[in-house]
Length: 241
Image (cartoon, rainbow, N blue to C red; front, side, top):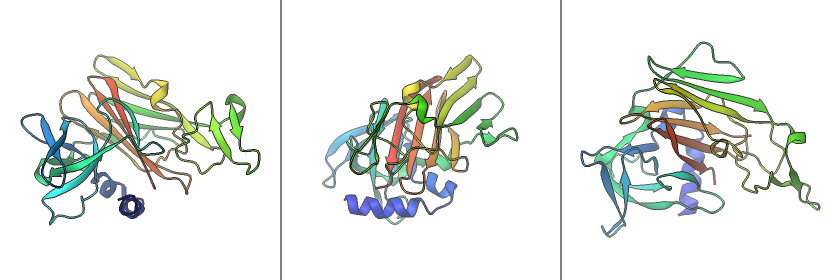
């Protein structure tokens, strides 16, 4: 299974951003949930509204049942190193891809230091900053010389055992009721953010999804944040295996 996912991940990183977003979806069902089944048809889980998942069969239109991978409904899920995700199958008629949702448009004031996406009522701002090694506790492998951990974290997403060049400084959402600033835990240890591969999509109710593809060239990954009722609900990080 991991070998299959490796090849799919490699293909994903070669596709245009809108095509890549068709691998990430949420459910569309009047009941507000969809049962996840194993290959025998037994129900093994459930996906609720606004729960982002990766559809590994998104390009196989002939298939009725698609293999999906998803994390916890709330909190932070990363496919590596622990691989704390769930897999199963759902019917293709119950999938709506992020690329098919209403989108916030990238604004002219976007620069190399920040990206701005907005519509009439929402403004999403993503700020970047240079990684300053002097402001972080870095542990090196004494023999090999590579980075083992940064600030006590060994799950270094987006780098290949080297010092990062950039990191997220902040992510904020300006909404009718105020301003949401993403908690630090949801933006730290995600290195080498990209300015080019970002999609901000609107879900049901007061929900939105921020999807990014990031990499230093060797350790690519996707990060998808879910905001619901103007609170950060989850972060799903899909690594390039």
